[in-house]
Image (cartoon, rainbow, N blue to C red; front, side):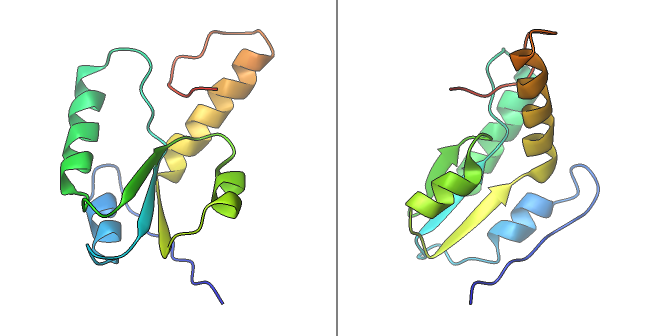
Length: 111
């Protein structure tokens, strides 16, 4: 049976780094990054760059917030690290509002 862990904490409290340490660098991990950037944002770009630099070269990165469950169903890895649920939820919210034609999406994602 698969194991699921939820790591919580405050903003910029080290949750991502802690979660990354739960896996070894040699494992075939898929890092699902939900903080996808479409508009220029210097602070976000720096955060993404720092996260990418910490990841093992053996890990595959998948940048997405749409159809995460479908992606996991269709791809097989030793483990998955979803970073992070707050950005996932925010991006989904903006995506749904944009689909209704009420606003243009302010936060990344692609289709």
